[in-house]
Amino acid sequence: MLSLSSPKTLSLSSSYSTLFSSKLPFPPSSSSSSSLRILYKRNSTITSNYSSNPSSHSPTNLIIPKSNSAAQPQNFYQPYRPPPSPLPQKYQNLDTPGIIEVLSNRLGLWHEYAPLISSLFRDGFTPPMIEELTGISGVEQNRLVVAAQVLESIAESPQIEPETLAFFDSGGSELLYEIRLLSASQRTLTANYIVKRNLDGDKAREIARSIKDFPARQDEPGFRCFDYNMPGDCWAFWHFRLSREFMLKPDKRNSALAAALEAAETDKAIERVREEIEGKGRDKADGREKEDAVKVPVVRLRMGEVAEATTVVVLPVSKAVDGEEGIGNVPLNCRTQGEFGIVVSDKGWDRWVVLPKWAPLAGMGSGGVAVAFSNARVLPWRVNRTYVGEPVLVVADRERREIEVDEGFYLVAGIDDGSEGKLKVEKGSKLKEMKVRKSLGMVVVVVRPPKDELDDELSDIDWD
Image (cartoon, rainbow, N blue to C red):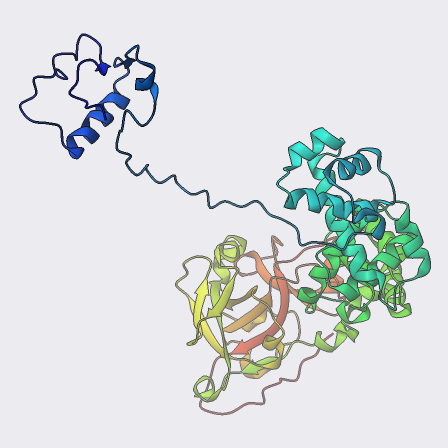
């Protein structure tokens, strides 16, 4: 065995020849050999020249201790691999070149060769590689794989119609992809509806969104007239809601109602949309007449009634003298939060009132506000003499600002007739005669201050 100390065995560049001369005071140990090896590997100027003896080239003649190489960092990222789908019998024995040929030439039905894309994913192919080999873009790859899985989930359903399955044999992957987020039963009914109506991908996406959105709208007018189990009714209710946002834009409103009428499936939904088109349905909410809530109750707050109430409502209070600007500054979103029912508002406010949750207040959303008037004469009816000079709180629902009900009462501003702060309560029919279409909110209850003597909660009111 040749020693590293032998000058005939290993010669280095001139700058290091003195360091590795044969005149070392002691033979190199294994640790020193390791140090030499590391220095030898790291310094690019060091070159080793073997002697002319052929035997010196043998790896057994030069032993350099090996050290453990540094551990390579592991790559924990793993791309998404769709779950395997069963391949048709004719594709099960294909090798990779055969799979690429089938995909390149689209040999077969799309939902049959779509699982081949997943098999390439499992073999380590990336979407760009598959696109280069087959010409199928990454977006189309994803759509085909997902659509094939959706079709597989509805193919065995007893509700699926033969015409629907026949339609998807020749295409329609973009339609199935849009309904991927629905449940299996919803997918089946929606696929039948889309094929029967000959709809495109954009409308299929809109239907799927309307189905997912429908349960969250149960507090909105007309909800109970539409059937959640029918995709057409969900889509019709989507347009029906949209029409109510276009009250001041007749063209858009009529277009939305026409779309709702065309989309609706059940007789009840069709009838409700037709009533809205004819103007008969504006006074209805969830099948109940709005007229039931027209006559505003005037309630005397009793001593200790709030403390005895099982449920209460907390409302921000605005002064009538502050006018419309004061109403605009009142927090709009007030809700209870947490186990203790802590009241949270979207902005700070320093005037609040706590009232029992009477029936008129129970159906009010987060847009409630109480307006303090110094005198009950502001009310548009013949005020009972027992409280004609009393201050009152007028509670209005700011979520119902449209002047819809002739017999309803609304909080309005900007009518300069000498009323306090230009804020007043006015009847719907009169506001329509004045061409007023929007108010600050519909009045739901008028509250009188507590007194020692007890009065009837509902005062006798002359509504003329």
